[in-house]
Image (cartoon, rainbow, N blue to C red):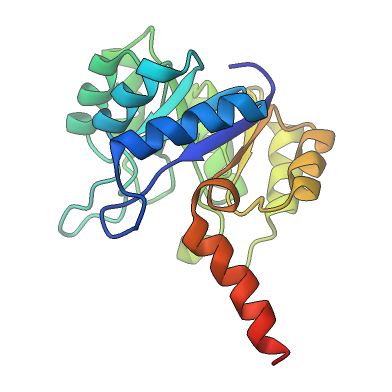
Length: 214
């Protein structure tokens, strides 16, 4: 994965753009716009994207299990499926909600596969770094109870200073200025999703602003 912008091409079943075909087209648009990588959810979307763009992919599978908080590539069932796609990097939930034994076993079972840790706090990032994750991502800041009031730039700054592995800025870096700031701070790359690939979210930003002054 080169340094630069990674575009997250994802749409959940309840979203209007949910379609592997559409995700493939979004990946083409991301490539034409200068993205250095893609983040994608599901083996179907990954396989479709790989048909159209020759960019490294961060692969995930979002799946909810009863009585389990982690939902980003939460078990080996999802990891095994992603490995079969040949995806360059696999991202997993590496918050404190995920068992450390599972995280350690990733490297034992797949010693040549690159893994990214999706974390939400400084402590979680440092744990992932110590465990040997190839990339540390700030993906889940604000999405866990322990990070609800966290400042993403402060967490990013501390992880860049303290981690031995590259840190990827992800999670609500919604403007070109914020993305550029993350890189200037020393982030290896920055992942942008909703602000590029979720038109319903972008429309709501504009709609809310317009209605606020009506």
